[in-house]
Length: 487
Picture 1 (cartoon, one colour):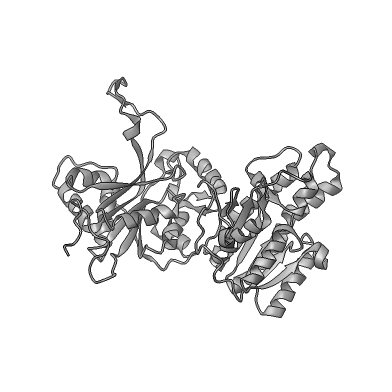
Picture 2: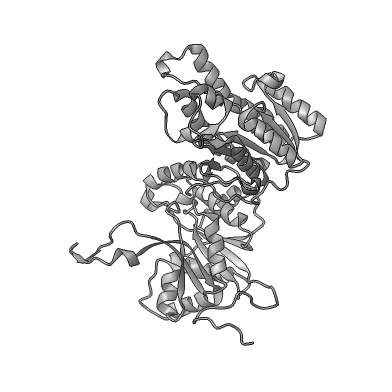
């Protein structure tokens, strides 16, 4: 049988020995200096959602199973700072942190020279695009099984105009054929290396990205376009920092690493708020997965989450009984409905204590146990955290604070190997909600079991610093709730 034929610049899905795949080297381009932002540090070091863009971006490629190696091309003079930051997270895939060149093209050429396997795939990505969806990385790498060059782009919502040197319109290209380019850009190394070799022979060579080099100097190589993501913004202007912060808060996960609650069997999980609603569902599903579950609640065993002594005793007892604490979940909460002006001091302090102060206390008291086990802390926000809600102002304000706490702790505790995440469910059928709003239309609320199922996926994953929304609609096929959200 003849091997399948492909257009110029394509290949079959296997290469070399049977079942082998190419080496996939990711190059993180972190050579910017932040001049357009008026900063005194490179923009890749600006904190966003608790960590720098560089850390967020490197973690994305660390988490991708298809990526074998990470090379970071850094602004000269800032390599020690990059090494210091990246020592906080597992960095087994990082093989080099190298000084970048005078421009994007030179930096790319230096990176290509640093890749030992000259038949590898290379995936270039901007360090200041920290909101990249990990699925796009995989899509680019898989596309290289067929195509030699891959770009990422999104449709243009705006009409694009071409102007002359006097600022008059010369042309209005049809919008349907236009795309806004992003990164990653991925190539088989021999192709991109040949394109640069030819470019260096051109005295008028100039390029702002790598696909344009292939397009001009290897015109017979088709460049396939993978669909990008509107949230995959490049942090260039000062306002982009604020936008990125908010996008991190609003970011939703549709496919969680692992897919199921694997790896929880035999682990010790302490659930605060275990007597009803999501907390009770968590206890039941965790036990079904084979975890050792310790449920604590005010009504069940007199544990008040806002009382430090109660929290400390619950943690100590769990550790003494089971020898360790692997995961701590705080699902307890209260919801007072009514105008803020009419809340009594007692209601105000109680709601803040249970919904926010308790999270601080649980975090403080859990730290030493989770540092030993390299475990996780899971907190709960609500869909109301995205904006204040009239008549439950305290609740929505404290849930917004929980999101910020999650991101801050994930950064603060990364050196200790503790993961911190936040579950943000939409309106959920719980006794707390029924007490506040009465009986609501059937089908308008998310089942507590769906939220618990999503939470178990988060526990079993390697993610940290993430806000995971669980929304309607959901499916319960095979007891596997689906997370449905737009990233």
